[in-house]
Length: 421
Image: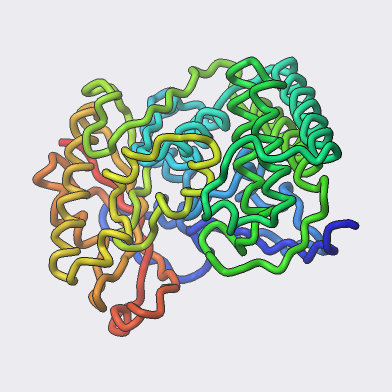
C-alpha cells in the first residue's frame, strides 16, 4: 500500500498579499519606502510542483514550518531597512516564526525577538541559528536513527508509549498516531544533544498537520488523504534533510560578522527581557484584533512538543476567543488598551529617535470595523511616539459574519512608522 497520489501543492502566501493601490501620508521618503515594502511582487506560477527557489516567501529557512499570518519576507526586509541602521539592533516583540529576525540578520543588523508562544520562540531560535556542517550532519544522522527506531516498532506492532487524549485520537488515523508516537519516543533516544533534539522536535511539529486528518493549520475541515504505513517516518527524515539544506542556505546569506540572535519567551506589553534604551528599531506585526487565535492554531503542536502554553493562554493579544464575547465598543476599547501597553513597552526599550514600524490590518467585531491606523494615531502620542508616515493597501476580508463592517470602506493593511520622542 502506498500514499495516495499527491495533489499539486497549493501556493502558500503570507498574510501580506500582493496587488492593489497603495495610499500614503506623512514623510514622503519614508511613505514611499513603506509603499514599496507593502507591494510584494507575485512569484511566478510554477509548472508542476512549486520550488522554494521561485518564491521569496519560501526561500531558505522561511520555507520551514508553516505559521499562520507570517509577514512576507520582502515586507519584513523593507521595513527593517526603513527603521534600523545597518549594524543596529532590531526588536520584534511579536516575533512569531522569526521572519523579521531572519531578515534583520541577513541585512547586517542584530536581532532580538520575543513572543508569548513557546513554539514561536523555539522556531525562531532554530531559524536564526548559524549552524555548522557538523551540526547539520548530526541532525540528518539522528533523524535517520529516529526513523529506523519508529520503523522497527511498527514492524514489531509495538503499542503506544503513552495514553493519548481524545483530540489526538480524532486527529490521526490509528496507524499514523502509533507511528508518530514512535517518532516522538525515538527523538530523545537517538538525539541526546539538546540542540539536535530540539531541532528534530520541530521537524516532528512541521509534519504533524501534513499527516493528520485536518485540512490545514487554520481549518478543522477533514482532509481526504490516505497515509501509508511508514510514510510519516520517511517524511520525517526528508523534512530533516530539507531543514539542513535551508539552514545551510541561510548561513551563506549571513554577513561575515554577525551577532547571535536572542529570542525570549516574554510579554510584549512588558518586555522584561529587554534592557531600557537599547533598541535602534522595532519591526513587528501585533496580532490583529479578533482575527486569529494562536493558542487554538498551535494547540496540537504545543501538546506534542510538551510546551507550556499557560502564558500564551493568559496573555495572547487580540485573541478571537476573547473578542468574540465582546460587543463592538468594548472590543475597540480593549484593543486600544492592549496596543497602548505594547507601545509603552517599546518606548521604554527604544533609544531616543528610534523608529518603530508596525504592520497592522483592520479588523471587525460585532459588525463594526476597527481601523488600525486610526487606533495607532490616537494612542501613539501618549506613549511617547510621533507619527512619521504610513502606507495602506486594500486587503480581502475572509470572515463572512463581519463582512458588512467593510461595506463603506474596504479593509486595509497598514505599514506605520513611529518615532520615539
